[in-house]
Image (tube, rainbow, N blue to C red; front, side, top):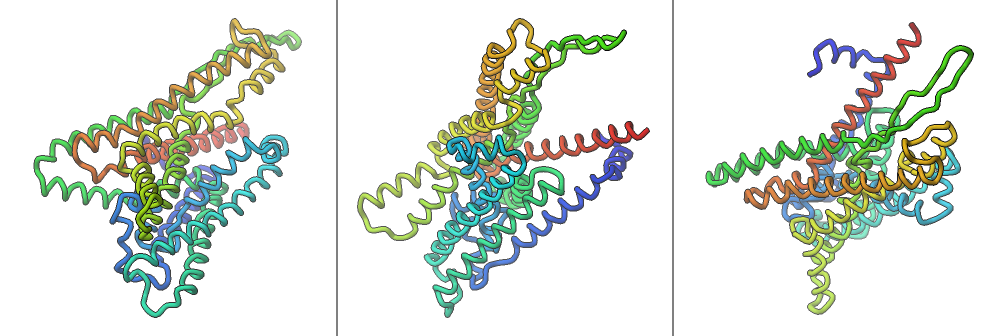
Length: 438
């Protein structure tokens, strides 16, 4: 455990204090925006998100903004969805791949600009859907308002709120500590814990037979958190033999090192991506289902698809598991430090090699096999861990924690670990700079 002296040293570290304060202020600004409702909305409708599974699940990741119908109701969702689509397009479209890999910092800035523009398009689309849903809720809109003007003003406000959240996310990533998007989701989930705890405790009080199930659920959550930490920190070390070099009378090099490949290279991003992808059709289908479609095959198809993508259904978790596995492989394939051919070329360039493997193409093939096995194990572990809390909620019959357990637990632990590692890296860099000055 860190001592008071350690905490003071961290606080007094050059630049770290400013980063922490800036991150805190941005998150406070986000939380303030959540409590600013859209103009023309009745206060009675501010609890719509808790009335069903899908909107309740969405409300969890918006930090309560959706349930309050606030200006930040769309949250970071459009930006994350846009980032996913642009990363997928960068793999498919050669021009975008060139921007990402060959054009350096200028290309990445241009790709980021495309992501922002597409975020605005998605925010407008999602805003229209959300306002359309509100128009079908009884007494949701204050009587006397012009429906057309209300729709236009609300969509513009929701879009502006989503763009503002995107801006805050990028500022946190650039000038603060941690990944801005992940931290905004983290804070939103954290803010919902008291409500989940209150609902769960009330359920246990009303039915004393659930007490042992509640204790078992907490124990499973605790063990799951331990496994998450282990998985997030686990690495596969590939031994590298470095050549000896003689400079004058001294011999340098010849010391064996290793390349660390993380068991879970994507961290929490596969989870966040999977949730963002799955919740999009879930929301669309639910809102379409509220539109009183005429009886027929269209209504039947919508109802079947709605059941498939319902976050409380078994089919959803099967798709969710497969999506996590696929996205973990995808995320590993686009990471610069996990490209077998590039690593093999660099090793050959500096005369280093893997013991028992020839330089060049054999090294690339050997690294590819190692990375495939490591990523497969990590993807399966991540998918299984994501399902454990949901299964625990089912067997203990305590479902009030189901939403926060199935997905949010991994996000919270993963983001917290990432934040700690970034603080640690900053402190190590400061100590190194201090050493050089001395």
